[in-house]
Length: 237
View 1 (cartoon, rainbow, N blue to C red):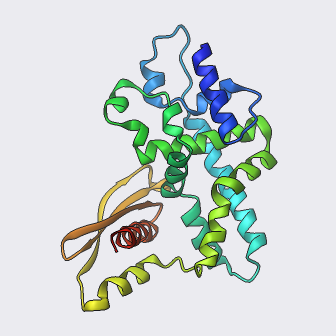
View 2 (cartoon, rainbow, N blue to C red):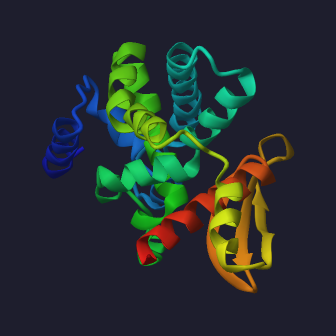
View 3 (cartoon, rainbow, N blue to C red):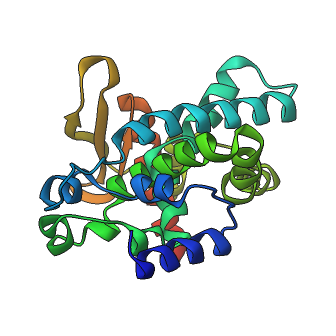
């Protein structure tokens, strides 16, 4: 790792803040598969896929523990729904953009040309990888503190606003205030192995797309699409 890269990673750590003992581990978390594949180095570079796998599980545990202790009156179904909205690509990609994580990513030429630093999927995966790396480097409590700042604080905002996560119903009510409207959810894509499928759904009203969402089930993806659509309506009004 050269001096310039080291300084960049130290800046990221300072801004969040994080306290990494091994900047090499953080660097791996920010190394996309395309960069590792294209790198002309004596020894093959390690990409961030394994750290991404670990980070997803760690984030899931942190959020599950927090909402289990915080919302004692909520049943399993309500807790599951809340966790699904917090531990997901959309949520992680949004956080990654807020902390400018894309500026620190190592991407292959093709991804750079396709604006990979702004690709939600790449950003979300990188954020999960950083969480996995931080867990290995500093342990559970350090990750908990970081996610408390970046993610768990959003739960408090949702709670103050009424804590209604049924975005599909809210969107339907909003759109049909002035009369009936043709609301349709269309599957645009599905990817990944059968046991870990990710679905992409489009929310359309009278043929016009209002939002897109991704999720591990079609229902979750539809809720994310409705959430995005509600945010767009709110900005336009």
